[in-house]
Image (cartoon, rainbow, N blue to C red; front, side):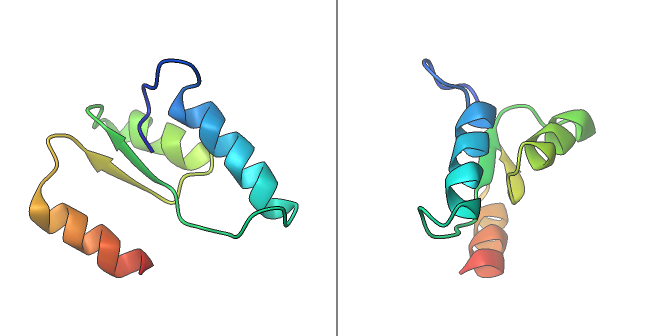
Length: 72
């Protein structure tokens, strides 16, 4: 999930997707934040919004592999 999207940011998008998942309207899927913001507070904000995990840019191959292995 890109955090800084132009119309609806990633936090709100995640909240809406999670609502749809919880109501059974769509299947449960992991949502991973992708952002240049790498502080502990930024990570906590992503988790609080309902995201499953957090990746920071620039994306490193090993970090992506860890996330993919965790959720696939």
